[in-house]
Each structure stands twice: as structure tokens, then as C-alpha cells.
Image 1 (cartoon, rainbow, N blue to C red):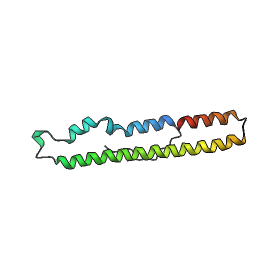
Image 2 (image 1 turned 90 degrees about the vertical axis):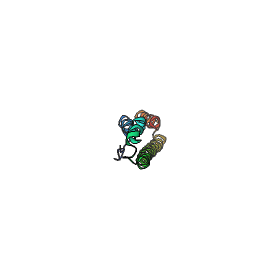
Image 3 (image 1 turned 30 degrees about the vertical axis):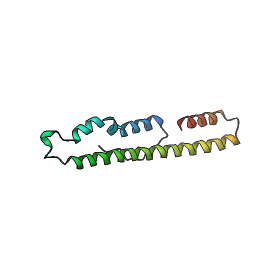
Image 4 (image 1 turned 120 degrees about the vertical axis):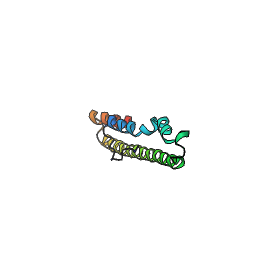
Length: 109
């Protein structure tokens, strides 16, 4: 069960949340994954349980690494946008639309 690897934009927060939900599928289905990975007594000789467990572990680690990278990237992007908006806000104190956009980005972070 591979995680999506596409570049994740975090401009649309709902889309970002959906991407994270999809990427959590392997974690959410861990009991099922373990049940299908570890062979029952009747299949012990036919399946290499240690290799299958290593593959499951690697899939989990890949999914976690991928999610962490996407989350950190989004935080960096949004923090950069907040910094830019703050600088603009200092120049133009009276711009209400700019203030709303700044608050929106701060909330996203």
C-alpha cells in the first residue's frame, strides 16, 4: 500500500487535509495489514513472515517519511507567506483585505 508521492500544495487546506487522510490509510488499516502479513498456522511454511514483516515495516516508514516531508513543506510555504504578508502589512497598515489574508495564513500554520 504505497503513499501518494505527488507534490503537495497547501494553498487549498481542505485538499491538503484530504491528501493526509489518504496517506494515513496504511496506519488506519494496521490491524488488517498485520492480519494479512503474518501467516496463519496453515500457511507458515508457504510465506516468509520475517520478509513480509520487513516489507510492511518499510511501507509504514515510507508513509511516515512522506507525510512528514509534506507537512514540513507546507509549514515552510505557509510560514514564508505569513512573513511576506507581515512585511506588506507593515508598509500598508490600512489594508483590511491584507489583514484578512494574513490572519488566514496564520491560522493555516
